[in-house]
Image (cartoon, rainbow, N blue to C red):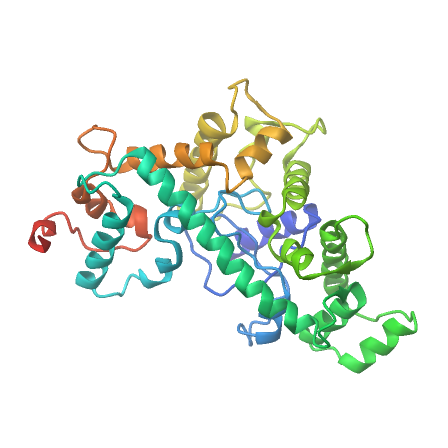
Length: 360
């Protein structure tokens, strides 16, 4: 199945002009569609510090779609757990995880009525999304310092290009001299393609008046397009261009759920494809297509992609509640969240519902 994922990803990397190439920190989840895998990742050095500092992240926290148009499979966990997401691991101590979930429930339940309403969940989702944004701003300060060592408050494309090539193992002085003298850079085709994608994204982040320099705020847009309305529009445009088969700048259901080219090698891969199609179909029909006319416009997609859209947060809250609302009262009780803990945490935790009352 590895060949299937690799073939599918290559198609998207060629189609999307944005830079979808950052380091992948974890092994590919066999239950995930291919998404934002770095084609330049050094398999022998997966934690290259310099690359981590200067490359745009491969994953957009707090957004339901990734830059390649794929649904973010971790979105529910991100907007429920926030920065505590990494603490919920499959090998974590169950009792400790149970206490964390109970603590989160008490924070969401702001009126202390032992039940979480859609409005309470909406407030929590917006708060966790904002938390992701604040973390991105903090990380951006460090990343900007890495590419602006002289501290003059701005970075040129050439300065960034030298830093990027150095992170890929090219001689920093040699590359700097070649760029300064407008000489040809002898790099491999793959690196050149990523450089071109990066350059497109760089200039999109350069706010008017365009000066080909990025300050710290513009660099944040470069690394995290979800922070910028202009970059959000650009990202939507690229997603539509990737998925739009008839060139009308709109998406039909068949276009939105179209599978990347590849070979399904076994039944497990087919089952994954089927689940993925069902998920995307439901998202298209129930959430993205606001007027339910069977067509998603760029405006509808942009509204859907906006992570700070409170109406979308309310829809998400209702969907999350519906998953675990066994008593059909349109609220969530603690027992329900604990019983469906895997949905909210992403970890295969024990069934806490049987023991929840022991905590009170």
